[in-house]
Length: 394
Ligand code: FDA
Image 1 (tube, rainbow, N blue to C red):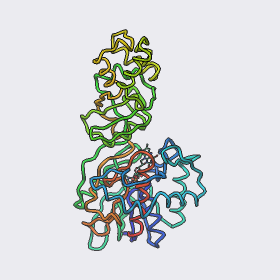
Image 2 (image 1 turned 90 degrees about the vertical axis):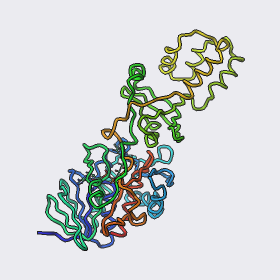
Image 3 (image 1 turned 180 degrees about the vertical axis):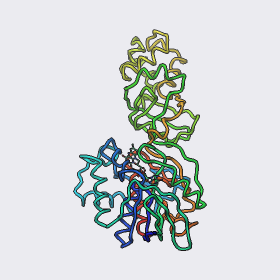
Image 4 (image 1 turned 60 degrees about the vertical axis):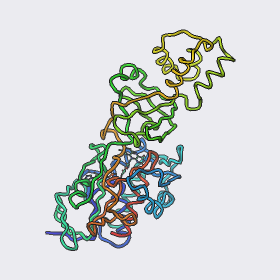
């Protein structure tokens, strides 16, 4: 027996739930399918359990895509202010952490429950632990075979997300479906992800595990972030490293400035006049966390005062402290990555409605598309905005 519906959405994550609510508000009959046992699992895990659900400052420049203009329309039609209004309407308490990032005061569950209650209110049929077996386009509708039966849908929305954290239900189903219908899948990789040590740095640096400091990290193409950095036994993590991972290419070096508010060469030139008799090592210890200063000093077998530093010494320390070169062994991959960078090419998708330009009635929303935000609530905002746009049309 085939069940006829207006809209069938595959993936009950952030984007799928939002789109289902919007389509149902327009009077469409909506079935929302997920193979996981809960809707919005990533929402629950996000922001350390508090969900960084959006950002006060959302600009197209906070998103990466092969088409940098693609996200503009959806982000302006359903902005952070619209989502904040929804959160306010539900009486959810939240706060700005820093850099405009909004987090729930209590729990990420507040956001998941808000969406679940709206789904129920709008009469969306949510089918969990249901797998999609095949999707075919027949004239003016889609025939979608699932483990819960066969559906005939006028619109089919692909909201399957990316590949990050397979244990939360991530799969390549959305990518495969896109390719099945003639869409181009652009190269993709784990991003907003910690880096791992290369074999040369690991023995020395992993001993500093647990150390956090402010640093400026620059990618070869020029983008840089001055944020907290965390040394772990596996590699380098923390907001600075997660942000730069969006801009890093395999094999490239990252430049780390351990003293971002100081030009080391200039400061040494000034201080050798004022404090010439000071031991260089005590000068350095006053500037860096103790264990980090110690590690740098271990690699420099000299006992010199500031006045005794040669030009070569000053150059060496300027390079070590302001321009330290780190060639990651790699990243921790999809196991811990927050997002997939890359995905379904937006070239063949309408930026206004998210509908496929190749297959009428087929929509792609959220992370499955080649739109990736910075760390800081931007990826959820993209999920809300793209889903809202599709929800007005499907
Ligand atoms: P999402 O991944 O949310 O949903 C896809 C859904 O499709 C899942 O429910 C999955 O089970 C389902 N699915 C997949 N394959 C399927 C199949 N074959 N059949 C049926 N269902 C299928 N972002 C942010 O802005 N602020 C934050 O605080 C965080 N924090 C964060 C923490 C962690 C640990 C992670 C992993 C990610 C974040 N993110 C984030 C990123 C954010 O979670 C992500 O960008 C959005 O959830 C993307 O929303 P989507 O709905 O597109 O995919």
